[in-house]
Length: 253
Image (cartoon, rainbow, N blue to C red; front, side, top):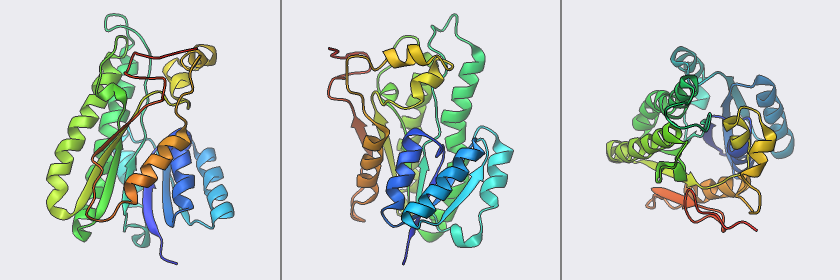
């Protein structure tokens, strides 16, 4: 049975994990990347057992240019016809104003959210150009459209993703390659726990009084985007919980 090939960065949890499962059910074989090897192994076994889905795992950190280049170049020839690159790896680190924020947090966000996306796209896009076919989906955020206090650098990185994606869409247009961004509001994953450096109690308060989006909601959106006819490109999707109207406006009860 013919399967398309998708490469997902940050596949070990949350949106990446749920997207992997949904694509596995929909005729994709998967290249799964992430920093946590044990989770990658478990996901590979789960996909192969439940969906008979071929899966290749690559354990590296997209922040590291040399690691990224070596890992992607190790992909066997038979896996290089990549139909979908999902640049999902990303994070928010810290929640402090510009004058007191931890610079290490800034560098982690810039290196992951911007440079990691660029490294991956720089390596994979020539393969797509050669075939004149492919789809790149970049994970953005409501934070890329509306800045909010204490999120200065995170908002900046996601604004960069928005601009990079728009330019990428223009540059890759002559080669038949689609480029899309997915921009969620509040999604209950490990996101807030990571932002607050493991403080699960503080993270839980982010979602109090509302029903946030789930990782599955975003995975289903991605499946919709990639399953459109060849003549359709969904450039950008802004998806919010019903009780969230902007980056800062929530109706909680």
